[in-house]
Image (cartoon, rainbow, N blue to C red; front, side):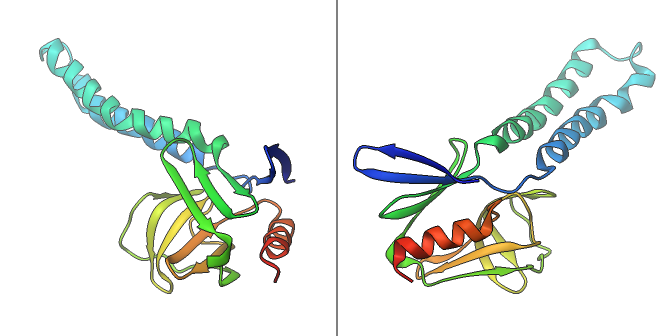
Length: 178
């Protein structure tokens, strides 16, 4: 359900992404990293220096903490529509601003995942992701490939997953006069 907010003279309509289990995947992956760093040392824990065990835990946490932060930011993902632009947001690390006059087409598609990876986990796709059938897509979505709403512009293609896709598309079309 979109949320209307007003800031000064411009009404902003905020759309949330559809639910996903991306946070659970990120959490599990983060825990797995720490376990993989520590588990091999546990059988010989009494024979190795404590410093080595702590270094391995620290290295595991070095990789795990950013994943946990990404998981914590999933509730911040949103799509904001005002009179000038559509803004895609994910925490403080991702912000795509798409001027409404740049929107050429919106279409839903099941994407074909490429072997090349970027920030893509089950239930979460962020930043620029290469796809076999669409090329590079700037993602801010709670799905990696299924039922992605693509927004084509002269500057590239954006992929999102609004929970209420019909209301989102209708709101954008109303703003661009299509």
